[in-house]
Image 1 (cartoon, rainbow, N blue to C red):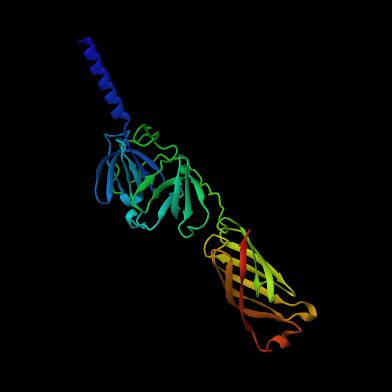
Image 2 (image 1 turned 90 degrees about the vertical axis):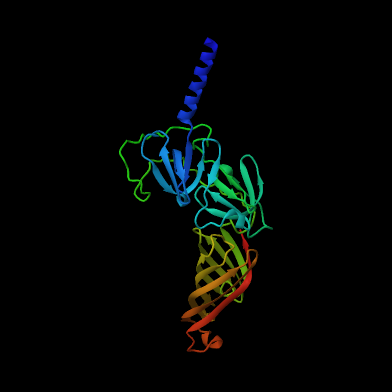
Amino acid sequence: MKGLKKTVQTACMLLFVHTSFAQDVITTRDLKKINAQIVEMNLEQVTFKYADNLNGSAYMLQKKDLISIYYQDGRVELFQAANVHTASSLVHDVITTKNLKKINVHVVEVNINQVKFKYADNLNGSTYMLQKKDLISIHYQDGRVELFQAEGAAEGAQTSQRTQNQPNNQQINQNPLTTQPRFVQPKTIPLSVAQPMSKGREERASINFGFMMGGGLVGLDLEFLVSERIGLQIGAAYCGLDVSVNYHIEPYINSSFVSIQYTNIGFGPYKVGATLGPMFNFRAKKIFQAGIGIGAVVSRGPLWTEAYKKDVTMLIQYNIGLYFPL
């Protein structure tokens, strides 16, 4: 009897320990963690109590403001962002990083630490890698969802930490617009840049040559990015030069761009003139580029009247050629 009594006491103690520390973990879209016990869930809201104050007030959060809930029994519920297609409607895989960037990809391989992928718009290009610790989730085009737990979070539903900031017993308005729950802030982890092998996505400069480039009939331009989208370009040709500031439509050297370009044709007694104006330059993902724009005449040289009429004040500018990321 004594042995049976001791066994029952031990079982009760283990049950008490489990129920004291087991908890659900809510992850919000700003990557904050809430150690909680889910009370109720409807179509739009989640009602919960703080895990360290189960006798306190109940709070509500909108599902649209949540990423996931790790339940204490091991289940995981993932919530779609309002502006993201449902997983079953995707035509490619979608990787979500910890800074909430979404990358449209085709996942090639997932190993213990890394995810290897190709960009969805360049499936014939190179393979890239991201660390799992820098990701939130992968939505696969077949409907599957793979969720990656944040470093420093409460280990899913297995072992949990109690929130350090103890809540008071003051009743708080349950309106989600006015309620400010106490959160546990996870460690911030920067996004690891995939190792690039595809020309243009990670390179910061390019060399371009072709017809009507560099301020001449055939010339050469060099461009380098000074920020994510802004590039400076300078070129030269026989008896000519050009300088421009470029704004890329996408944050890659191999994307199309608009620019303000200064072009000077000829020097000294052989100068024709100079123009300044906007251009649009189309760049294919590989090699080919072409541009068209207009330029206001800012100066005329001795050879101007041999090339143009005296009263010309605007010129159409264009170029066609090849570019190579460096």
